[in-house]
Image (cartoon, rainbow over all chains, first blue to last red; front, side):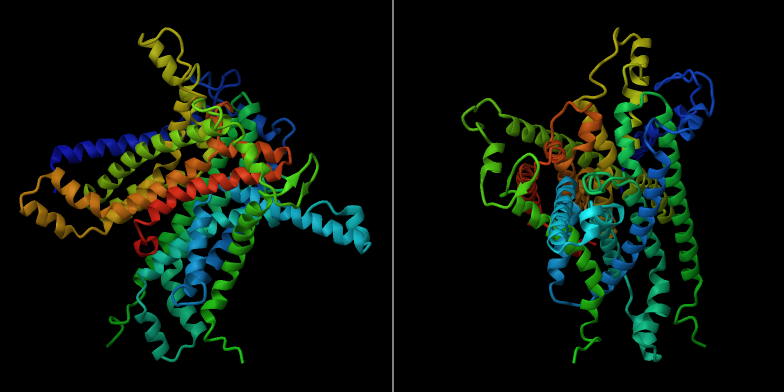
Length: 297
Length: 292
C-alpha cells in the first residue's frame, strides 16, 4: 500500500531505532573487558577480564553478591505470585463480581500513579505499623518487642508489596488480552464431556493459556529483578541490586561498574531466553495437540 | 449457606484484590491523610493542618513573574514531559507503522517486535549509564567530533544535562508508545486500506484519514504511560542530570530521607493531582478495557 521509497525510509528509521536501543548497551558490554589501565571510555586499552576479577573481589564496602542474591530471590517470589494472582484474577474477570470495575481501575491506576508516591505510601504504612507494634508491645510489656523489635519493613514484606503493585497490573493486562481471544467452546466441550470446574481448568483451559503464563512470568521476574523506583523507599535495611547499582553510579569511576552491568544484563538475557524457549516449546505443543474437529472419526 | 460456586469469581479475585488494597489503595490513602499531619525532627504527629501545602507554595504568588522553587520544579518536569512525549510519540508511531504495514510475515513481525521489547526487560540503570562511554567528556561522540574537526573542545552539554535526560527518557520509554500503537494498528482492517487505495487515496491520505484515527486508542494509552512516568521520575533525572536538575520526585525523596513524611506526602498529593488531571483528560477519550 505504501510506496517503495516510503517503506525503505521507514525500514531505515527502524534500523536506526534498533541501533539506538542496543548500541549503548553493547558499548558497555565491550568496555567491561577493558584492559587494566583502561578507563570508562573508548579506546580499549587491551582486552582483559581484570574488571570482572575486581568485581568478584567486591566493590568497596558494598556487599554486591548479597544484593544479587536478594534480587534473584525476590524476583522469583514476585514471579510466582504475579503468575498465580493474575491468573486467578484473570479468570475472575471473565464473570461479573462485586467491585470488579473498581478493582480494574485501581489496578490500572497502580500502573500509572508515580512510583515515588507508591514507595512513599508503603513506607508510611509500615512506619505506622511499626509505631503501633511498639506502642502495643510496650503497653502489654511484651519482652521481645521492647528488646529486639526494630521494623516490619523488609525485602519480603514492604519490598515485595511495592514491587507487586508494578508487576500485577502487567499480569492482569496480559490475562485480559489472553481471555479476550480465548474460545470458550473448549470449556463447554469439556463440561459437556462431564468434567468438573477444576478438571475443565486443568485439562482444557490451562494447556491453552500456558504459553501466555510464561509471558506473565517473564514480566514478573524481569520487572522485579530490575525494579528501582517503587522499592527505593520501601525495601528496608538491605538493598537489592538495582538500588546498589544506582548508588554506585555516583561513587565508582572505573569499569568495574560496566562489569557489573554486563553481569546483570547477562542474567536478564538468560532469564529472557529461558522464558522465550519455554514459550516456544509450549506453543508448539499446543499447536500440535489434536483439535476437537480433527479428532472426530 | 455460602454458595462457593455462585461466588467463585469473587473468591478468585480476592488474593489479587487484597494485594492491590494493601499495597496500593491503603498506602495512597495514607499519603493523603499524612499530608495533613504535623511533624517535628523525629516523629510524625496526627493532626489536620494545611501547613505542608502552604509551605510548598510559600511566596509563590507574591514572587510572580519570577518562579519560586516549586513552580520552577513543576515547570521543568512539564517541559521534560512535553518534549519526551513529542519525541516518543513520533518515534513510536513510525516504528509501529513499520512493524505493522511494512513487514509482511507474521513470524518476522513477532521477531522484530521482540527485538524492540527485550531492552524493557533489562536494567534501566544499566541502560542509563551505558550512555557514559558515548556522551562523556572523552566519550565517543566528543572524540569523533574533535577528530573530524567539528569542535575544538569537548562539548559539555552532552552528558549530565537536560539533553541527556531527554535522550535517556526516549531510550527507556519509547517502547511504551510502540506496544499500544502497534496493537491498535494490527487491528485495523486491511481491506479499509485497500479500499482507500482503490478510491485513489495517496499514501499520505491513507495515513491521515485511516491509520492515524484508528490508532488513536493506542496513541492515547501510550501517551498516558509516557506522561505519567516522566512526570513522577526522579531516578533518570537524577542519574542522567548529574543530580543537578530538580524534579518533584527528587524533592519527595529528599524530604523522606530527612523523615519529613508529611511534607513529602503533601508534595506527592500535588504530584498525583497534576498527573491525574492529565490522565483524566485522556481516559475521557478512550476505554482502555475494550482495547486489549
